[in-house]
Every structure is written in structure tokens, then in C-alpha cells.
Length: 379
Image (cartoon, rainbow, N blue to C red; front, top):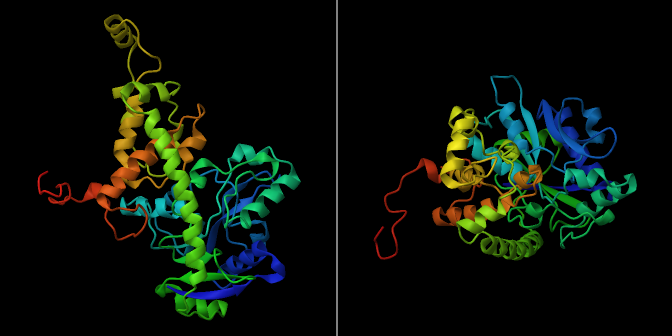
């Protein structure tokens, strides 16, 4: 991918990003942009489909909250045929989830231009909403400049979502347009584009692309990710101790109310018909009483642990670690940690990174006779 450098005007990164995205609209590189837009009250951001470039002053591609995992929106925008091209401004984890869904024919990327940006992380929607107006503005500025260090406590005492603090992929993978901030020259950011778009964007936006490498970027990205990996290893080790054995696992998830919020928030749970929302799990009173008589007591609601374990087995290889399941859980269960822990081992076993490459087949869809053989050659 070739890159072009864009000057940050008046030391205002956000305004410069808005200007670049706005030009994609005005020059008809895209017909509409899906991009985070500030809510009227200023207490949050939501993904908004914009066709009027005048609205760009209200958007923030570095939005500090993520109320919805945008891969699910990409799935909605893939329903039916339409004329035109949509530019989807998404965070790296949203992009990876969208690429995974494309492999399962749930997202059509052929009429989309995926645009992703180095991500400093997000805070919980409820925490951001509780900040004062000035604290919200300070939090946005803190995140926009907090790449080189652990963001830790932001103004108002708010911290990043755990999934963001331990994210291994905070920079775009496989985006059509990647906006790079980490390690760039002071007062500039870089735009990397795929070959298929280079000529069009160069002409319409009057940009000059080259193959110049930036060693400072690699150093900055490596340092940023290294700190996250260190914290991630610590968190997963703690989780491994918490769920060591079935009894401990049941204890950790004992307060699950089987609301299905985690499933609904997860971008990878795409099945139109789910076994957990079917007659198989709609038990009658006599069935509950029968179990209670046989065991002496049964937990209500039931089937909570099997719900999480079945979901885990279904999509752990494609889990992108976005943490939306944690954010959606009313009982604050460590669902994301469990999926991260098991997903990490599975993904490493198959040498697979979900969302890394749209042409890379998911392990669950490919059988290789030799893949589960040990070094000695036995299975």
C-alpha cells in the first residue's frame, strides 16, 4: 500500500481528519459515509450514514465510545442491491469483525470502501455520558494524544474499556484506506490506500503517494502494542485461575441471567436462527419440577453456563476481542476474558488472525488432515 502525507491544519487533528473524510464525499469517491457522529447533547457518539458533507463538522473518527459494533451495521448495509459506494469509517476491531462476517457471506464488501484509523481506545458509553461537558472534551483530547502511553485514568476518573486496554490490534489490518497517526511526523498524518483506489484518490484529492517507509511508525506501533500485550497476558492469566475447573467456571458465571445481551452485541453471532431462542430451550414447568425432584435443587434461570460454552465453541476462532459482550452484560460478567482466553489458544493453534485477510478461510470451514498432528506425527 502506498502512502500520502496530509498536513494537520492549525494543530487540529480532528478538523484535518474531518476535512479529509469530507473530501471523499465531495469528490464522489464515496456516495455516503458511515462515521461516528456526536449526539446533539454531546454525551456520546453514534454511527451515522452521512451524504451531506456539511454534516462532517459533527463527526469524530476517533470517537471515544462504541455503542454498537459497526460490523453489525455493515451487515445491514449489505442487504439487497444498491447503487453507489459506501465509505465505512470503522475502528480496527470493527473492520476485522466485518471481514470475518464477509467470509460467512454476512457482509458484502464489494460496494464499500473500508476506512480505518489507529485507535487509542474507547470508554464505556455510560461512563462517558456521566462526565461534564468540559470533561468529555478533555477525554476526547486525551485519547487523541494518548497513543504513546497507557491512557490510564482520563479526566473525570474514567478509564478505557478493558478490551481496549489489552487490544493487540489497535492499528488497521486490511483497510481500503488506513489513516495512520502513530509515529507520524509532527503536524502530519499518513493515508495508506490499496492499489485499486490509489489512482482515483490521488486524482480527486490531489494527493501524491509514494513507497517511503517510516521507521518511526513501526517503533511507535510496536511500543504501543507491546504494552497492551503485557497487560493482556496478565489479565488472561488471572482469568485462567478464575475458571480452573467446571465448578469455578460455574461460580464465575453464577449471576448470568441469560438475557442474551452478549449474544446480541457480538458481531460474530450472526445466525438468523439460534438454538437458544428455540423450543429446545423453552422448557415447561413440569420439566423444571422433574429436574428439581431428581437433583434436589436446580438453578433458575437454567442453562446459563451451557449458553456461554456453546457460544464459545461456535465462534471463538473468529472472536476479534472487541469486548462488546462485556459492555452489554448487566451482571458485569467477564465474558470477553473467557472468549479471549480460549480464542487465543485456538487462533494460535491454527495460525489464524480473524479479520487479517479477507481471502484467508476460517479454520472451521477448512479441513486439513495434518493440522492436528503432533510433532511426532501422531494425532
